[in-house]
Length: 510
Image 1 (cartoon, helix red, strand yellow):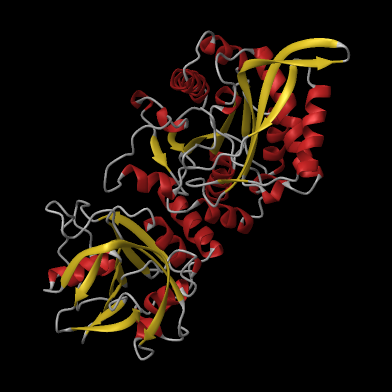
Image 2 (cartoon, one colour):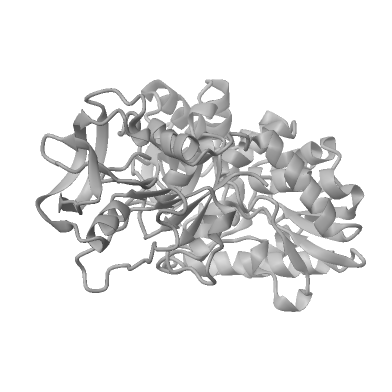
């Protein structure tokens, strides 16, 4: 059994980041909402972390969590809200700060004898983000770090491996935060740093063999990283009993259907390509609302996938490329998030198909999926691909979708993406694409007035898509791409560049 850390989520925007930092230490960890049922068996874990929260411990309906079965029995670390809750529950004084403590601060006192502060340099920078502050600690608590304005930046309960940090060690602004987490996870909890992509592959393949036996599995491939890595893992476990289906919905990038099929066959996968363009176009006809388009695309996908899956006799399992953030979101503290946009995947298959689900990647973050793919020797041309939405160009064409519009956008997108590759910029961008806007603008080509379509280019940098910044592509590059698009794509006379970040704007326009 591998060593594991348990993180209880109280709703902080940084909770997943705590997990990511621990995973970077080659230690496995899991996130559960603090109010998760059924009760978790703590004997499985080497230590517990209590996350931050948007709530205050002073609120009448503040999250309340009983740590009595953890304290003194296993290492425990409270971060921000978690630290304040530990102090508040044990008779300490927590009060509203006169001014919200948000931003960079420096520790001007550090108790280097504390196991949480081993090797942490004096005056190290940390990141504060809280509206409350701990004024007084219970008599059994000891201060182990302070700033010039916050007397209790970190504490330990005397005689216990219980600690609290009133700042966020998981964010990059806390310069030595990762080392503090290492002090806790490795030093205090004694976790073995053996959780690697290679060990994940070995353990997962062995588990899949046991779980699936000689059963047949159907997997819907998208050409993306997640489904590709899931397919190779399953193939490694069950070989020809994996049946992959790759549907051409008519909304893929230029020549993508053919090129992706070729790459999959090169991996030895049993893949069937299904051309269903006309069915998708027919269902999309006249639809302009983004949600209506997503639902239409999802509906046809389900119909096509069901029809093809019936051709695989005795199939018992549905393989999916679900990753950990999707799992966390589905059982979050606040419940599933409000619908910003519907997600399109095989998970929408109807109950009557009666297939059991197997999700070999549902414990991994996006960057970890790529590392596992590398351990599986999947080509970089697949692993390095930018994310691409399930509904494809259908949600990059604002307004109704037609075959003519798809062809225009495919040409624009091809010029943009190929340009990024030719100029060595593709790997500097997390995701890029073009949007066809439902407006026309006046232009002049030769000596003639034109009134044609406008396209917007979008390129963002991100770690996992949860937040994103627009990429400052060179002006010379943008000028060249704009010129190439207008000259080569009939029907387009204006190109704009999207400089919105997420939030407030989403990466896709629909």
